[in-house]
Image (cartoon, rainbow, N blue to C red; front, side, top):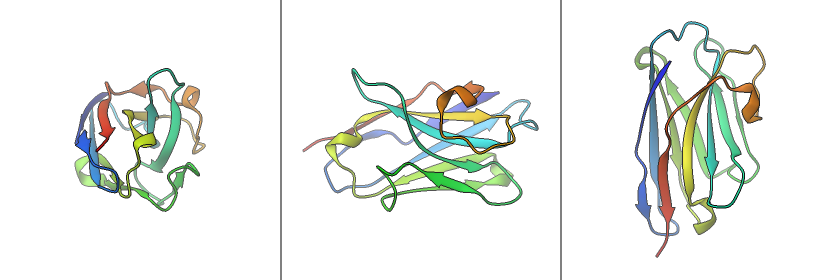
Length: 124
């Protein structure tokens, strides 16, 4: 499974960014696509996840609920992370990940494949 992540950058507090993650390769076994982030000196943390196709299922971390929205384009094998109301504490490298398990999970060890990450910096 290959990933093409994009959309990161520098934004002021209160601003918005949209991250994209296109997956390719042997993706038929992928059931869920997740977003994680890792800030300097901190452990990787869950942001949200969505079913890759079929029945629409999505979950979010409490820290981003109401500000971030995950969506998908099944035909383009793409998942998006719309981030609004960004805060300095949202600064991190954001990773797209793919999970073959049958359970929609919020823990990183469930995910089998990982993208390279894209930097998001929220600063004035």
